[in-house]
Length: 549
Image (tube, rainbow, N blue to C red; front, side):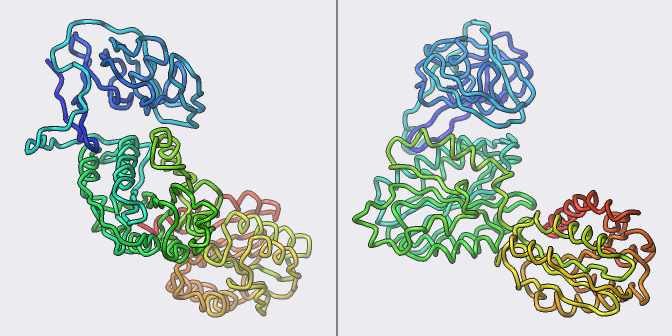
């Protein structure tokens, strides 16, 4: 049975992709230059690569064993199984691995890749006659008025790159019509390589100009062929390059459940800037972070020295990106010859561990520590309690717009050691924790909880961060803890109770949030606090993620 073919529009041309691949046929299956290992859903398949593919267009990751993101035909040429004239190839599916190596072979320079979920290798395959559908890829423009009928694409897509991505392109007079088309061409290549699918990345597009326009939403297309056609249809708007205005609009209007945003998936806006923005982009970056959107900037053609006087802020990239560490920005010298920049950009966009920097449990929480300073603790054990507090605090991204830390020490009385807004850097917070003086006295935990809710969390009541209270005590309270803890829960504060030595388990459970078993901790010795810190950090992240659902 001959393979089914799907026509894929590609920015001024089209190529053919095979439908579902089966190994049951005796003849090899005709594929295209662009078919990847992940498109073959069999442990073993015989395929036929066309001739005439350009070596520079191949994306290959690894050597001998290739990441399934790689082109099958490119890997076969790289391996020496076939030449650029094409030929039969046998593909063997393999498990994922780490550290795919970069090797130059047979005119193809493969790329490194840190990790991928599936792999493949290739060998010489069967060489039987194929039907006419197996001839080389066509890149001619389809006849006018005869647009190929859309075929539903039910492919899951690249599950290793699950993200909701908005491409914010420059449609101003600054870029002009010609470079605008080159920009669309580049965005199309990026979208194609991402592996768009129902369970993979979803993309939408916004055009920045005098007034921003959302060209299409995440929910509109879940297949590469439809996205490519939609990009091709986008018209040039002109006007000023109000990138900041467009970024703010994208953060506020584009990423919503009605527009197709998925829960628990990173929200990313890739901002393309030709030259420099004509308005304030720093404020827009702050708004995007507040909405949980990761800002990634692709700058093209940096301003020359003679043009710097026209730039409002030469550091606009660092001030707008999700995090100023070099990962969230990418520079391309010009819009000409951009193919080689597609792969590195896609690798960055698919690096979830680094891409998750807006609105995470590490930068969107307020954590107050309620520390028992009673006489039963003792000075040396009190130092171990402070070390426990530091080990938790240093994990979070403390800043004026990020995570915030506070501490209250209690006996019969309460003393605010520092509030949420007193120190906005990790270094200062850790320094003040080290210098907390031991009070010594009785134990009134209930009053201390009420004091902390009122005086520490009260001023933060309407803030965007999720609130946590970590109580550390070594004994029984002289007052009731249940009612004050219930009031704290009602105020939206998640409580972790940590007991040491003689702390009654009933009191700990009364104070802890639900489910009690994951928010209550006990250790017989103060030295055991060190192991508990990691569990609490994981718990905070779990609670935060659940609150975002």
